[in-house]
Image (cartoon, rainbow, N blue to C red):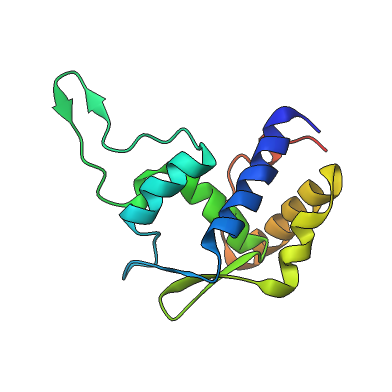
Length: 134
């Protein structure tokens, strides 16, 4: 498995761990900006909060603007590692063991669950096959 795939599995693992017993979502079902700021740092997604172009600062208004963080949350939900209920993002306890599998097994579990779920729910997981060729 290549470094990008290893990193992605570690980011998903860290995301699920960070969520803990659950986190509040916005009214539109997105990660709150406060949580997004913390997650961008903790997960090292490379997303830029409040980017500056020239002498202008463009305020980040929604976590939806943070592409990599949004993608990680979608993958974790598609793999059924996280779920939403009552305006909260919650871990799926029975599936947490998927991330305990070492190396390729962990990535295959996340990838296959995400690919299976994406077809049923219409969730687009752009780039999932490009991240790892396992």
